[in-house]
Length: 99
Length: 48
Image (cartoon, rainbow over all chains, first blue to last red; front, side, top):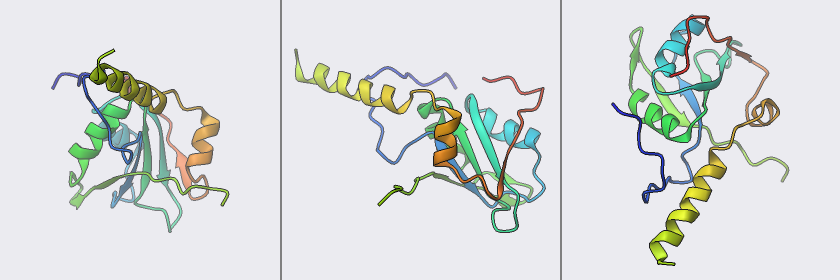
């Protein structure tokens, strides 16, 4: 799958699309290698934050360097099966702070 | 300048703005840090 054309050939992105993906229903004991293996296939990863407390376990934030790669990863990995669980991949919507 | 070119440059600017590199500090503002650990990229990881 060649890297998508990034030039502005009318390639518009809905505002919801951004480079930070929020991932749910991950296996609790998933390793950094697995995380980088699964998500790294879609593009260069800026950072991964894995939930480790009992309220955040099974979730993670995956930040990509490029917005098109994040979009591609989100669409391809939603419903991807890892250790018998179907991944849920959403765009992170940071709550607007300072109201 | 034909309108579609104006649009294209506006979208390009929008995308470039949304694609600018994120600083660690910005990440800390955007993402929770309590309850989450930042994973170290494994040595075998080579960015695509």
